Length: 86
Length: 220
Image 1 (cartoon, each protein chain N blue to C red):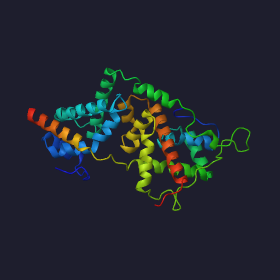
Image 2: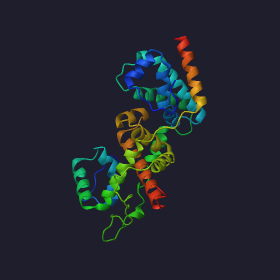
Image 3: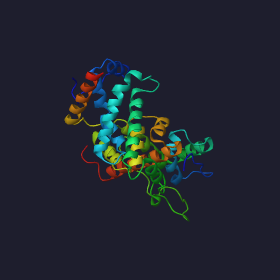
Image 4: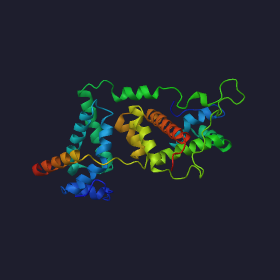
């Protein structure tokens, strides 16, 4: 499943399994070339890969929610405990 | 004291220097930045939310006690994540958590194709393996259009719904921006398995967003 080699010509069903490997630069050069050749002629897979990239980019903008006040207070207390003993 | 909603502004060197000065604001800023993520990460190794909170609490104490010896060969964030995973793994073993992370990972890499086979033409078809149910573009303005906060929430919910190993890997890689090598190290994964888990996770999240758009773009 990893660093997969694909058959002579990549079809859509195979391409969708290779997107992360492609984006990570983990495909062997032959397979990477065939991946790009397929993309060049397949608008559907092009959309797919663009959506994949978009998901990755958007995931990077997610931020954690605010800290619950009780947790915050507990950590602050731990901090002062440490500071007092250090 | 900064309010929880305030965006963080201190750089890593500032934070490190602040911690070394025993500066409360620096510590609390780190806590605001990473605590929730650390709890989520800890949950990959231990069996209960309470145990995860314990592990993160221990991690913060470890950070405070260790900061003077921190050699800055990795980023501060990476160093904190490593302290967390070390402690969480120890705790997971002690609690004899039913399913260790390595077993979760093995199970979750062994699933079938990541995209449903029905979306492609089957054997015997003239164009076997090509899209039968192709992805549809999401927005009139093209995929590069910035997504709304709502779609970001869909992505967040989709990540939360993933099986644990996939969720952990995509959270570290794509949400936290930790590099592949470091994720392998934190989670004791091979490069190949890390990639398979990440790919499955991304595939499912893309799919969730597709479903969301297909269900009709609710008033934007």
